[in-house]
Amino acid sequence: MTKTIYILNGPNLNLLGKRQPEIYGYDTLEDVERNCAAVAKDFGLDIRLLQTNWEGQLIDWIHEAREKAAGIVINPAAFTHTSVAVLDALNTFEGPVIEVHISQVHKREAFRHHSYVSLRADAVMAGFGIEGYALATRRMGSLLAG
Image 1 (cartoon, rainbow, N blue to C red):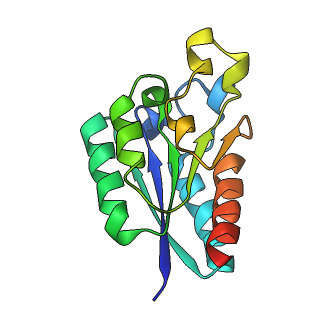
Image 2 (image 1 turned 135 degrees about the horizontal axis):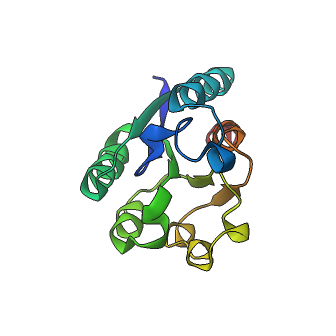
Image 3 (image 1 turned 180 degrees about the horizontal axis):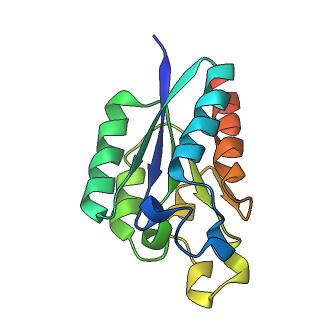
């Protein structure tokens, strides 16, 4: 049975490639999905990439991942800084969790320096552009292979 990694994305990431390209670049979530699928394949893994602008939907997917995923890569976007509920959901997940941010959040506004999700994450990628997703997928592959 193939193991699946959930790659979860929070609000406004549906606009990746169009919204603030000077910060987030011109690549899209489709590019992220293609890159991560290629990396996952090297480890014999599948991915399920999902995006929502709704906090409750993100939480529902985390709950679903408890039964269907071996690991979670998550870019919670603005929920990073605001959502204890997302943290609580991640705390119910027993596999590895890797937090991803496209921009280098520590060089941005002060409110972006705090992450509730980091309290649960096994690793954090920030400032690598969309390449951070592929790096996180590679790390997840290593963690799940061990």
